[in-house]
Each structure stands twice: as structure tokens, then as C-alpha cells.
Length: 94
Image (cartoon, rainbow, N blue to C red; front, side):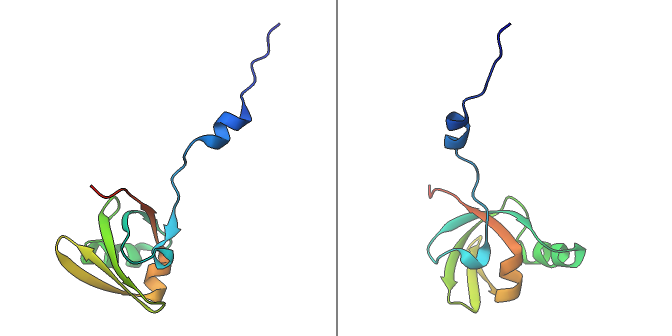
């Protein structure tokens, strides 16, 4: 009887998406919004600002209190509280 085992080293080497709160992303990086940690009111506010899931944004400024992101040629300022709740992953620049 042959028992198949998975090589744990191969599984550990696979690149998994690295989600971080938007507040932890440094200025100059491009990120994709992957989720949020909040309720329906937060989701509604993010949609009103144009920060829906899958949207790629540029972090223009991050100075420990105010985060400014670039979306479609415009800018949106976010406070520290809301930026802690937005999850994003880095993407390569085109």
C-alpha cells in the first residue's frame, strides 16, 4: 500500500497574498484592496469614496495620522482609524 504525503517545504514556498492594513503601507506603493474589517456602514462609506474590493490605489502619503491615496487621477484622504480597517496587498507597477 502506497501512502502519498505532501512535501511541506513545497507548500511553504508557495507565494500567498500578503494582506496588510492600509495604515501599514508605505508611501509610493501601489496596492489592491482585498477586504475590510468593519460592518455595513464602513462598506457603504468605502464604496462612496470609490474604495471597492479589487480596486488598485497608489499610497501617496502616509504620515502616521493621515493617509492620502490616489484613485483614478483623484485623491482621497483617510484617517488612521479607517485606514487600519482596510486590508490591501501590494501589486507590481505596470
